[in-house]
Image (tube, rainbow, N blue to C red):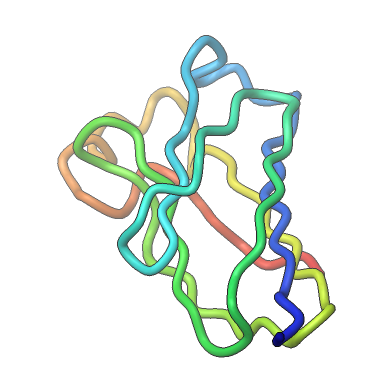
Length: 103
């Protein structure tokens, strides 16, 4: 049996935008849970190349491609992109959130 890779998605506590709402996590087109402000979500994926995206309503983050090796842990962080006054971000489907790899 092949050892799986682990993914951790963290959402920092310090942002006030969307502070009462959860972001949906999508990996390879499948839902992998929801993360609230100040929380983290952990899950396993098969080794290889994957893409992740954070979503809220009709908008979210651009897709982030990452490689997961057997036994390794990939750490991602999701946060609001910009600030509460950048309402134009609501018009796009991938400009409202920022998803980055931190480890």
